[in-house]
Length: 332
Ligand code: CP
Ligand code: NVA
Image (cartoon, rainbow, N blue to C red; front, side, top):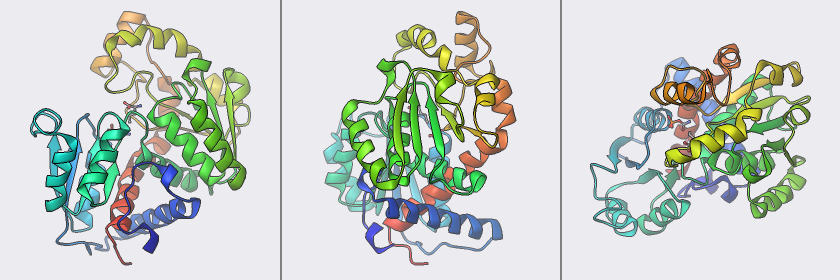
């Protein structure tokens, strides 16, 4: 783990396949300790700041519980209760936090904000989601694939929906590095940018994986081992985009018909939160306005794969714990 100590965790682009697998192995180790009730609070005395300019359930709880299990104290900062961005620049905030904390998590808008934090804080800085990337989510997803399918390498992975945002980008990078066969399935305007696609193709060539772009859901999902989707409108996007997204992405909804075309052992995954019924304010409002019961995934598919989905959510905690531990110098 020596190569991971004092590193930032801003995007998986910065890590070799072996380093990514080190995070996964460490997460699996921590998961076993947690299940056995074995204490692993060797980072007592450390403090980390958790900055959330966007809302969160899983990521915030994963950082807080993961930190506390490691013996680390946490301080939560949101955009309303701190000076960040409004009265103090990211650079100045980072310089303050770097004097007090051993590590910093940031969730918010452009990737340049977390990069600036890392640059000026000079302590390990972790990306808890930006518009461009969501790297901690990918570790949880890969651990879940390992647990349910035995290994991540060689799996046929199809991402349906808005593939040019944080989840599509980060899954493509993770799959390319770890040797999965990744397909982004969406109308062409929702494909990841061509520069990133080319870079991922190079990594895939080295790892034994591949990258495919498709607009044909029925063709793309044939024989898939993992079908993955995310919300059609991400945090921070304006309400005006809903109508266009629904029109563009409805053919890419994950339905039982889609799952039936996949491999026999296929699993459905989603980073969550998901719009699969009317049990949320937004789901109800949009469902009533646009006349449907669900959005990116039907409730039938969601309920069938509940175990996978909530294993995936649980794995956020074990993998985020591994990221903090490895970069803060935890010794097994
Ligand atoms: N998947 C994920 O990042 O969930 P939260 O937005 O609840 O943190
Ligand atoms: N694309 C989603 C991911 C949520 C975990 C968003 O940015 O809102």
